[in-house]
Image (tube, rainbow, N blue to C red):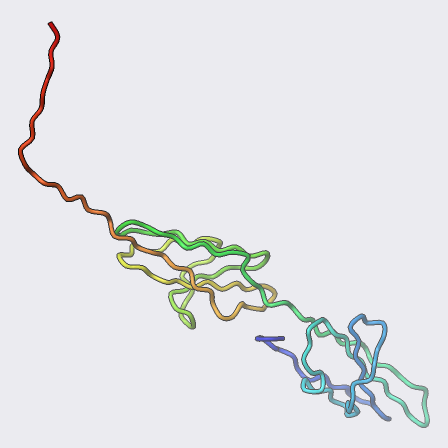
Length: 178
């Protein structure tokens, strides 16, 4: 969970005996979590997770057969990324259409690199009329995870070329046939 960790502690309710929490990345082969012998497995004991991980508790007692709790699944979703962004250039004042693509998720467009309300959603964003080069920002959200930081996409306003003319004498020769 590089930037959006929403894990909670896992608590085993109503148990008698010695507890040992276990983890697995395939839900088949479980290994003991070092030092995890209390009724609550903390997110700190889970450590950094890079893949979906399964947790369960084994409870042993001198008087009863060992018992294993239900398995709790902690799903790790990848932080979404852009596959491409495309800036835009216009000549003089006007609107520009910026573009972004992603393999999965919803793209939101913003006026600032952090905070602020979304200006729109989708793979393209058309700016309001602008007279100067303006930077907009895009982020993508998928499975509850959002790209961070936002990606800058620039709408460049180029100066309209001007034509300078000179006035002066000119002559024109017309040749006519016989």
